[in-house]
Length: 181
Image (tube, rainbow, N blue to C red; front, side, top):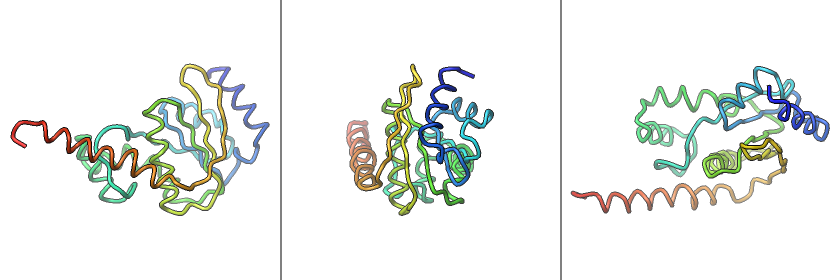
């Protein structure tokens, strides 16, 4: 285990102990980080989930994680719906099937992570999540975590503007330049 990560997590535990107990869900956007956290129980008794998607590519639907979303994403990734569910939806089982007082989102600062983060925040707003949401953001090259408590206010409209509408417009623009369309 990376010693700087361990020290940074210990610092977070000292600052906000309630985020490392039962009734807390930590959602990570990196497979390696997810495995390391889960294997070493770095978040104490909390639950862990992985968001293993690439929301910055391919069309999306207006509603996040509904059947149409799943089918659309699977098709555009060239996956069967069953494989997509296995890879993306099942790792988020705690998000869909268990209530948590706190949700802690662990996302890097790059565009890939930020689009995934925006998607999750839109989902939480769309489902009217009533608990507290914290963002632990960091750069991949250094694990200095900045923790921010978030208010779920405009994330659905931001998702629609930044991901849904822009990808819809991009797809129209691309298809209009493809010969035969």
